[in-house]
Picture: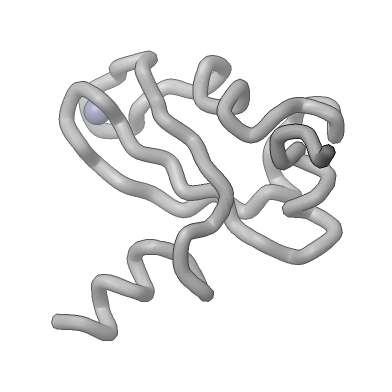
Length: 79
Ligand SMILES: [Zn+2]
């Protein structure tokens, strides 16, 4: 049974991490290759090491890329 998606999986696939701040709901895309954590870090754990760029909050929900090209590109296409 496969475990949770890990950082190395996203780097291998060239995918983004989608981060959502629980406090201010700001979304951002993070290039997985730029995240300075061990490759075996489960993606949901990444958010615990991050800080929101908008409000400085530390409750960041991270998950594997939800849309090709990232959430911001997805929003731009729909607007
Ligand atoms: Zn925030």
